[in-house]
Length: 399
Image 1 (tube, rainbow, N blue to C red):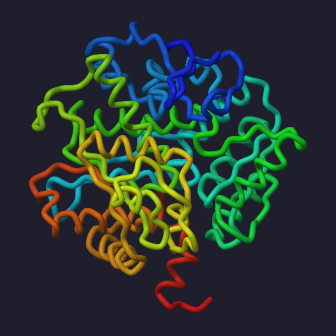
Image 2 (image 1 turned 180 degrees about the vertical axis):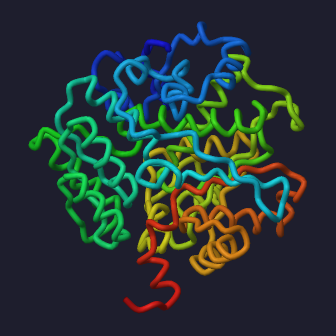
């Protein structure tokens, strides 16, 4: 259970003091990484002790990986049982595995990042937080803030799924619905946070949501026998999960936790998936640009992908390039068709974002970028049950 050594800027590599709450790099506004002395966790004996741990409250979920998480999360966690989500084999392709993040508290992968962020916020004595959200992060922030005894202010577009609005109110958060996109919500938080005394928990505006999300990388590798798949498909709005998994791979290699496996121990191709109606990263990828530009008139029923300018776009694009991966943008019709296909053929009701990833897999098979013999992990980032109003509309059902 390592103490934090320091925080490091992902852009200019400046080091910041971790004993105080930090947001972004003071020199270049880059997102921050948490760095540890991981020497005590080096070697496969430590790794194998994780797999052999008894299945009890202290070894389940993200707590399995306390050896690579802040010691505060071990000693005083704000937890609702996040992590340890199933890796489900496809019924139709033996080389396809679906990582079911809908099994997390509040029904999405956002629980992982907010568990760490709220744990550290409470540790630092922060009493009020503000979160701009495309939907699911708002619900998770409200839940974990309630568990932490922290006042939460959530700003979301007014057309987010009804479930996101209901859970924010049920958890006692202060919810503001905004006539605009998540970028408009972020602007409001930035304008008001100083006067209101809010700590900004926006995506990549603090370093600990990455630490929670990186556990997806540890889990998928452990569930595959401590080997890498050939490719990872990740729905990419803000992209924190993709960034976090890449950090996890880096740490596991440093620790000597990776087995060689079929692909010789090579990191997986990272496939970032967006919606055609909001594809800033896909456009930047196609134009060979290191960063994206604001995507105008963003529109998609996959609300988690409706992020017109990700703060960490430079990290996403760099990771995809280094991994030999690609960025794919799918239409809402393609996403909806894949959602219905996986529900009827696999018995899995995916979120629209997860269905974008399954549609991307079919697309990359058809184009020859991947083969059916490649072992891949597809992330379903949330339960489809959180989108029943959105899916009902797509199905033409009347309320």
